Image (cartoon, rainbow, N blue to C red):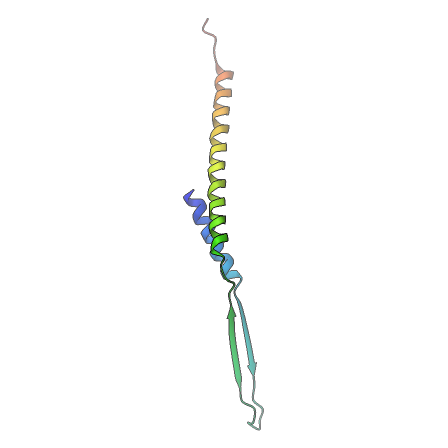
Length: 91
């Protein structure tokens, strides 16, 4: 479960970093010197929806818990089937 939460946090961080947009604009001067040089940089990062992040974290935890339960149930069923197949008659 802890691994699932860590994975979800890393995924959210990578998504936020991948969505960052940087814009650069530059204006050059001519030989007469009458045009001034201008350079503009802007960075846009999307807002993080904390409610959606919390919901995704809860959903990931629930999915991990369900998967662990299903794996345990499958192993128990397989163990019972093996015991039935290898059971010897002692009558």
